[in-house]
Structure formats: structure tokens, C-alpha cells
Image 1 (cartoon, rainbow, N blue to C red):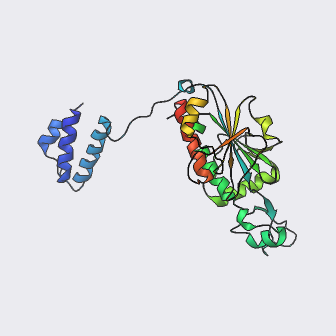
Image 2: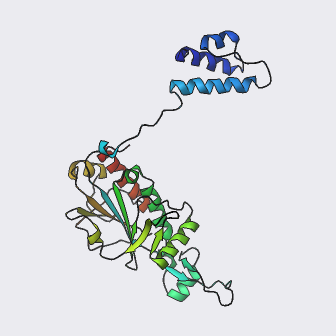
Image 3: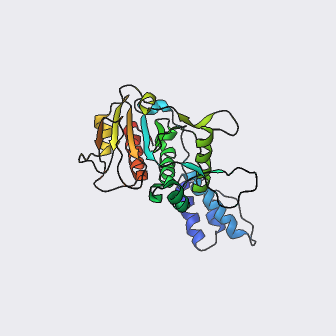
Length: 290
């Protein structure tokens, strides 16, 4: 093994000029490089190897056990008022005798159908808000550590349970197809197993929450402003569960009947996805999750 600090500085200095002298290579403990057209590439590969060995560029991850985290409490997030509605929209492409596929309604894509057939405002049909929230929640270290549970409560009073290990589609088009299938079949199974990744569960939401957990509505219209990090550290015990209701809507407010208190966690109006991220970040710090 070579002297890491000296060899790295020597090689990096030599790389700046595109050469590596035999003396510097001997000082580094590296074999001689043949003088040919691939010399610069080989020097660069050796530089990367030395720097990687010194730990400058890469650091090996250490496996973390769930026992290393603080407490055993969990965070429950309920996306309230989500406008997830499926319908059969005739686009004039249906073949004779074939059933029209069920699609997830979006105000941007199905404005005419929503206005004429449903008599509703297309602006409230924003399933992309739910998609963004789910991506932030499911991608969070809080969820990967097994300390997060997610539910969706739609405007049509459909309650959906989301499995923590579901791999949500990154594109909205694929997400729309998945939700349309969920609303039709009432559940989504994993491809290689019978594990249920998403399913419609019976109401009310209170029966799916732990007994005695705190139930908090997060809304911008609340006059009670709290720092979510302070709440997580000082108000929530190590083994205490907490449930948050977050409105997955573009405008307006929600008033779920199962929450017991309400608060705002920012002095500014924030998107639902931002609220989800702040909740996850606060409780990752609370539980010691990196």
C-alpha cells in the first residue's frame, strides 16, 4: 500500500500536465505505465483508484439496524380530499364492441368531459398533487426505515391504503393508469407475488390509526403556527404515534372529522408536497434516521 496523502497529491499534480513520471509512479508504489496512446487514460484510472482508496471520493455505506433508531413511534399521513376519480371517456377511438377503458380524470386533459358530462370545475381535478405527495413520502428515509404509513382519502370518500414498499411510477401517465386500475379492481398486487401494494379499505380512517395517537390537521389557514421540528422533538414521545391530515387539493381547505387539533407549520402558503417533505424531515431528525 502506498502513502495515500503523498501519492494522491503527486498523481493529481502530474495529471494536471497529462503526464506521470516514472519517479512519481515509483514513489506511489504503482507499476510502470507503457508509453503509448492510452497513457493518459491509464494515469486517470490510477488517480481514481488512489483517491477512492483514501476515501476522498467515496465512502462505503454502513448497514443501519432499526434498533439504532430512537423509540418505536410511527407517523401516519392521510392525504385528504384527493380528487381521484375514474371514468370512461369516449375519445372516438373505441372499436366496435370493445369497452371503453377506465381513465383517471385530470382537469388538464379531460376538461371538456368534466364540464359537460359531470358539470364540475376542471380546476379541482388535480391528481398530480397526490402523485407528487406520494413520491415525496415514499422516497423519504422515514418511510424506508419503516416509520411511515400513508393513506389517501378521496373526495368521493374512498379510502386507500398505500404499502410502504410500493414502487410508485415516476411519470404521471403511468401513475394515472395505476390509480384507474386500483379504483376499478380495488387493489394492486405485486408483479412477482401476491403482496398487496395498494388497496381500497373500509372507512372510517380512525379504525386504521393506533388507539390514542395524536391526530393533527396541517393547514395554512390555521392561526396556530408551530415549528414542526419543535413539535416532533418536544411534544411527541419516543414511542408515541402521530397522524397528520394534509390536503391534497389545489385550493380551498379541508375539514376532516377525525382530527383533534390543527396547526400551520409555515408562515407561507406551501404546496401539499412541501408539507409532506417537512413532516418527514422533522421526524427523521426526531428518530435519528439519516
